[in-house]
Amino acid sequence: MIQHKQMPPLTDSQRALVCDGERVDYLLREEAYIIQNPAYFPFSLDAVLLADFVKLPKKKALRVMDFCTGGGVIPILLAHRTSARIEGIEIQGPIAEMAQRTVKLNGLSHQVTIHQGDIKDLTKPKQEYDLITCNPPFFTFDSSPEQKQATHLAIARHEILLSLDQWIAKAGLLLKDKGRLFLVFRTNRLDDLMTQLLSHHFAIHRMRFVHPKAGQLANMVLVEARYRGGLQGVRVEAPLIVHQEDGTYSEEMRRIYYGDPA
Image 1 (tube, rainbow, N blue to C red):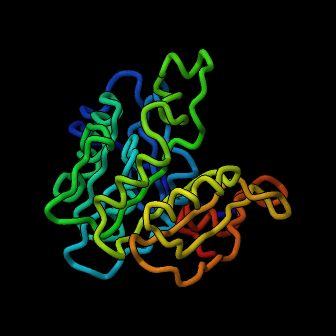
Image 2 (cartoon, rainbow, N blue to C red):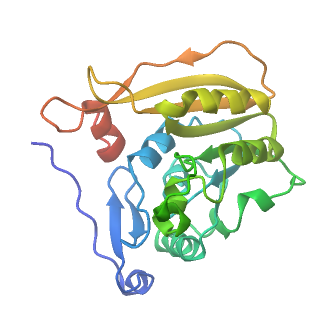
């Protein structure tokens, strides 16, 4: 049986960053802490897979932005692979504040900055970004009572405050030419995604489909697109299988979550 490291106990100063009703999850491969609150939408497999899919250019002055950062899991994961400055933006104030405490909990305030704000309000920066990541709301907005209430969960999952068109347009505004956009999306909206990327001058460079088990249909897709990068063909990588037949994680998923060799 594979043995994994246990989360080391928090110091008094670390415990002071965790509020009542919150818990701390531990990412074994990166040895990183993530503050979670059951009242908000927790980080999921999508975010972990996206962070692993990102290819970080070998550039010292790299600028990185994470859209829809939620609790900040993607910036935290990326910070363990690069010394570049990383920013995240989250529209929901309580969740952004929780992410800011997660950054402090990991001792990454010198590298990671979480902004509370609306992506739609972003303007063209003096220095454009090299790389943007996004784990966006997957589902279109409808007039169901659940979505009208605009709960934390509904905002995270549905295009209530931010549409596919809006965040892709902003990514193009912020990225330099040939800058990279990495995202995770649902396969049942892949046609919408590809249409919007192409209409906003993104060329799809890499794709990888995620399957719950071997032989099952893919339910997620990981995409790397380049802004004004030119259409040079799409590289479709080998499928990522999440679970084995017995329900346990595949070898690759154990590598992603725990650092086990695949």
